[in-house]
Image 1: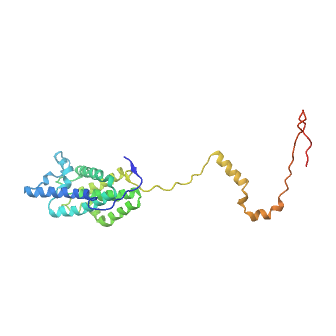
Image 2: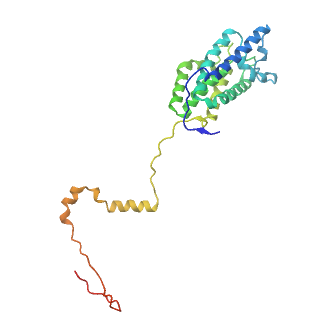
Image 3: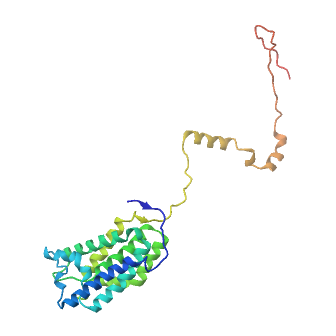
Length: 260
């Protein structure tokens, strides 16, 4: 799996958001088939800590008690699913698949003994993933998504508490935990914050230290400015140049006396 440094955002459209509709459509098709059969399919839901109840890990999100239950889950499912598809296109199906299974397994382990049905666990998983993923990546557009989730669905936090006995708060809590774990798992995959500008590093080799010492001991003429050198020009001693030469016809190469 490779990490994309920049986030690719495509123009919104119905075709672009179709995968989110597929999730909702699956629940509606199952509900229609259940209604046509004239019997309740709740027994196909998740029943904790039993082998037969493991089937509910897969079936729980598409089974609903009634039309009101289905509608209440369909609206946030389509909204959060569309946001996930729009901002995390490469991760969409992986996030859906892992959170789907993980939510069911956590619920199967920790929930009370009863049949648990409904897509609300998946809704909590998506909300949790969108919130924590934006916080982990520190990417402004994704952090804005995190704030949107808090603003629009912040009240969902009460759903993870055992307040209403007829509501599977364990499924909600399992979804929230699953979303957090998946956000950690995929934090390096998909859209990432743009890289920071490279900082100039201080070199500490012996040569660099020597050059710095020389620069401090013998500053360049520009270090003090032209005015400084004009004022201190009279303090400069004249330079004396001494030439040493020898005549070409001298075999022994004797040097001559210095001449001014």
